[in-house]
View 1 (cartoon, rainbow, N blue to C red):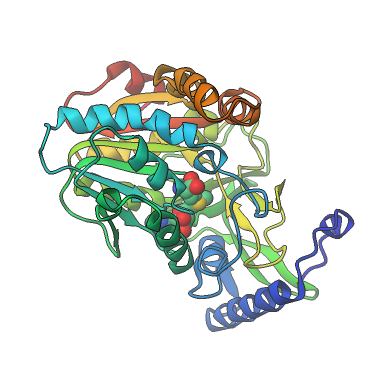
View 2: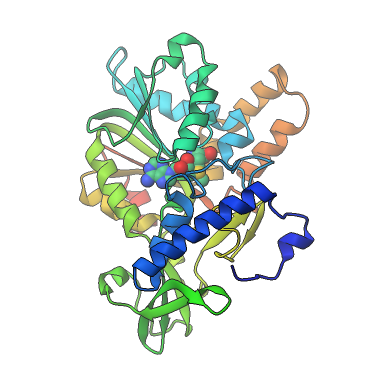
Length: 387
Ligand SMILES: C[S@@+](CC[C@H](N)C(=O)[O-])C[C@H]1O[C@@H](n2cnc3c(N)ncnc32)[C@H](O)[C@@H]1O
């Protein structure tokens, strides 16, 4: 691999021997795929292998990933107050569908299973089914361990699915899943688009930009006339396909999608000339996609306008669009914090977690909540999203 500056060595973050062996195995697997593809992989394919190669990729193998000992921390990992707040809108949507009716929660990419556990414990009337669609066998196993501790009446509602159910009456949830879908990296320079990919250089893998052949990848991008040269960005057609499938799956109810991102006009902004690609290794965010294959997460921000357009095209309506802080406050996170601090956690742990979720400098502003659903639309939210 390319020697990338060794900041992680200086910070004492070298992986142990076992992890390094694992990483080298994945690197060999990627090299083989690259050779079979003629020496170049487009970035989406490269990322797919790094994150999801069976038994080897970051999400497909056994590294810790979440929490203090992992590489990043998500809202449900931080505090159960997140799930308890989510129980408010979820409970409302389930109730609107009718007491005693057959209702379902479908959670996509359930991570360690903590959101499922805490949400089921917080809902006054749990759904008949809590389905989980998880691509990672390792995480599916971890979810099973987490959820095994639930009381029997709740545990029996949970099932894992290998493909999307086609008749969800209820709620579809995805927290930080869209940012983990493989995306394409594009560069505009000299009046032309190039596609980012990876090839083998003298000292290891290297970025290798080639003239863009599939020009439809630039559909919906702004005219680059007044943009800096070069300008780099990301597009994620996989997320659009994912949204079309979600729309087909949701017969009645809502989808709540939480992730970091922007509407298109902010995403493809002249000042964002390096795109949004980000890697996470042991709580360090950086841009080196070649660092320890399989031992770090790779992500990009979500273009919510594009997703909302696809959803609308497939018959769903935009119900609401807010930043995470506004949405959590509206749904009662402060009341949940007070209950939690009076009952179980009088120290500052819960307070500090909620502060991280709400602070504009941390997750409050960058993270957005897009609620899509059947029924009426919210014209103001559609206007703000520009869809
Ligand atoms: C960043 S983690 C977030 C986990 C969890 N939702 C949380 O908030 O802690 C991304 C999750 O999405 C899963 N994932 C990635 N692609 C997926 C897909 N196409 N369908 C379902 N899950 C997927 C990963 O395996 C992982 O569980």
